[in-house]
Length: 194
Image (tube, rainbow, N blue to C red; front, side):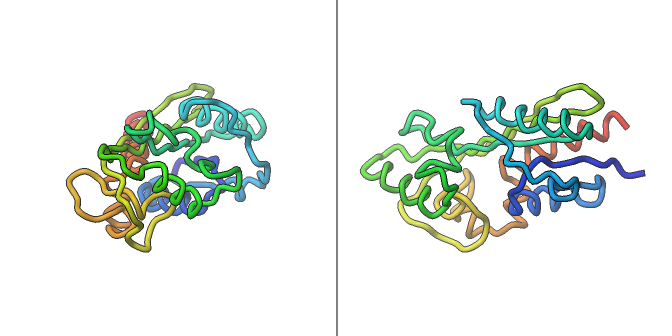
């Protein structure tokens, strides 16, 4: 029988991305599937803390095995910003376009374009808590390129490539991304304990 796991997110892009990575090995339930319509607070100042807060919220309110993630874009020249505030860098409205424009402005004139995307997943399984991390390094470019993906994808070129995540498309991104790495570690762990 397939394992059932709740992914504590309302972000349909993330849900689609993680479902594609997991394939049909695990039955992935969304917050909608369990009738959770609460905006779970992300009040920690670390990715690890936010991922754990979200997973604990679902586990304590619904008693279901679940995982949650938090992802940040960490830019060297900005001392790791936007980091944990990546989704609300420009304002509290989670506006990807505004976030990208602000980052492009903040990077104006900076020679060091190094950055990394980092995802942390917190899993609560049978009362135990586990964390998994994925990191992909790359560069921030000066203007948007590409139409696929979401968030900062049009201005991030992963190491070893000449195209942005938004130009590479979902198939390649889902193999190499920070989230893919963290989800693959999660899968490996889940299948190792079957």
